[in-house]
Image (cartoon, rainbow, N blue to C red; front, side):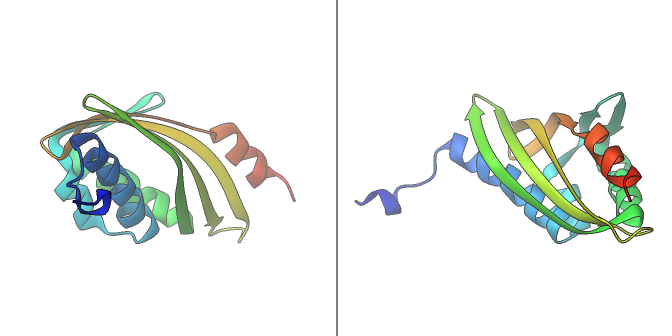
Length: 136
């Protein structure tokens, strides 16, 4: 059997779930994927904020969508070990109020159980975003 026909390892499947999240939730604004992949008791730690479960995360998602559009998030490096996936990504978007194109990078670490996200930690370049918004 060739390598192309081999089933994906659990680590590779978990990496694909995280890539799918960015593609569907952010690049295509598919809110259903939030409810499919984020466990009902899952928590996202985003700096000083915590979002618990799909409903709180959906509110966060929708709030960002009111401020920005044309999201394109690209996974740059995706690593997996045990039940964790780490994804370093870049994001391009447009600020709706000013029309400015913006670019940031960030890193997300996701703990996965049974193909669902149960906990995640996220850090992104908020200072860089503010600098871009402040410049003419």
